[in-house]
Length: 454
Ligand code: FES
Image: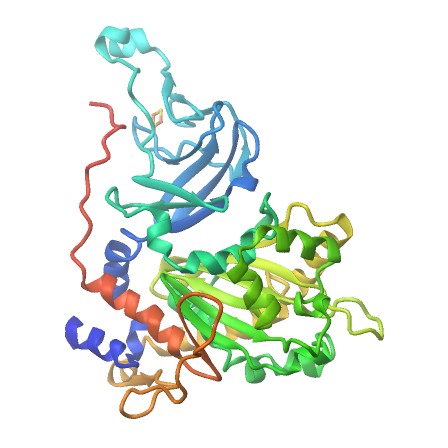
């Protein structure tokens, strides 16, 4: 089937099953989704000091994300200007310079070429080949939001804030609980034989899978939710470039600490001092607390509050995780999972929250393992010839005439459009962005020319 009809089906909520394992589609995604979108690379708290760096990938491209001597954050293509060796092979560290392992060219941590063995003999010194002006290739576009460092391979990318749109409002709940923001632990990294889109769609709004896929976690008694949050009248919202799920915690029936899902009083006080009136109204008046979310294309966030201590009380411990679905191929994804916590949180809370995270997500997380079994199965089945004849039904929440089963929430303090109840509104929104990206002409290349040896 031709691309236009595949994308048309996707827009109708009828998804050609093979899009979850198709090499041709993956080649197009690399060019038109990952060649243009803003993608999360790291958080500023991972490189707090001059010289700190982490090495991260955007699909096939490796970048050194460093803080240079002046304090500026850089993202530099990790490929030597000489013969293309990977300049930095460590995953993280602190360095004033990076020396290429092959022939020893060296670069300052802002990317400038400063050392060249046998410069005189091999190149005729500065007259023959000037080092000045030679730098590791910078990422075409780099921008930050609340300390989250994003890059785009498109030199003409719109400003990050514009790209995120109103989803930025929801990002604040996860990444700005106080003026100093979050710190990250991790990432844990592992590979799963699953297509990258499945995780991103799941976190964007698949609250429908929770009672079934994750029932065993509750049944075996390792995860108990507080009685109060059993009333799950959450809302699904989509705003700008992302969307997610919220839990409804009824106001009036709960004390404030429970509406803020178990945070210590001092953290609640800082949230109230940091967030806007609209943020506070969403939690305090409306009783909606953000849960899982995704930003197109492959960043997801989760906020949950399990019971981690084996006591009779209903006390819960909230945790936040950032995760990225980094594509390896049409049928493989590298998952990166970070624990995130407010920098100002009390130490005891940080420890308990980390425990809550490890219990639920990350390589030891029980939710993670339940989810991945499904996603691997979808991906392997999507490779077969029958999958090319099947259109998956992703129309939950829509009537036959495309009207929603229930109208959008008239009063929702957050931006965007929100619905209550089950519905695949967000998965469809995510795939509409995907279809639009695949349909758009490929981004321009070649306008970043600060590197190179000519
Ligand atoms: Fe890096 Fe030669 S490839 S110095």
